[in-house]
Length: 217
Image 1 (cartoon, rainbow, N blue to C red):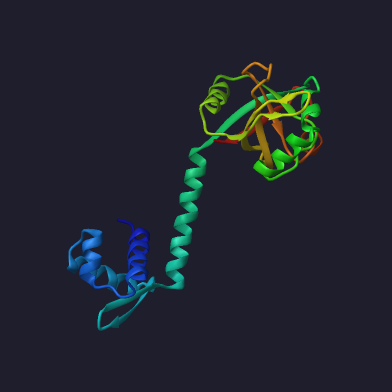
Image 2: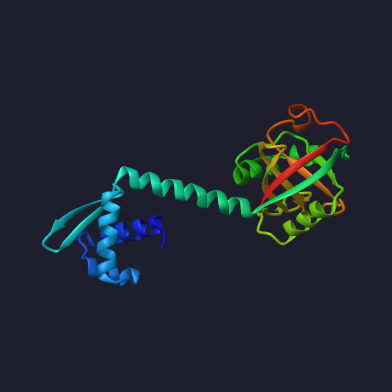
């Protein structure tokens, strides 16, 4: 077991019990009492934990150095988890039919994107045509991935269709999102991207330019 996990488990146990014995720690970690004693001494000598003896056992707390070790470990774990869920999609910019501008101008969608994605989108989508096999495979993976779902909304004279969305970056620019209207007529090789930025202007994108999307699924 790594030092980070040991520190976290030992300190957590100590916080729950206030005072702990080395035998209690050994039982929890399924280690011998002798191994626990050696490890506690080592962690203390490395200034990762501090220990105070009491009649009931020990009070163990993490030091500033120990906190830094745990924070670094947590950051690395977060980055690993996020990276394992990033799908890269490459496509070439293409002009749409203007439908994105229409639906993004509707108050329901504007408010929903702000609520669920954390930003109010620029009224217009960036459309991309996928041209390579790996990117198309990653696009299809999104169909079976957990998405942010914007539900269907009924108004007096119309029904606004549901949308599946995935947070994303566009040529490393954030925030953005890949959106899949459930009533879309686009083929699987075409995706729509929204952002609070006017992406074409912000990134100087013209029709035919390659664009790299990183979608977080």
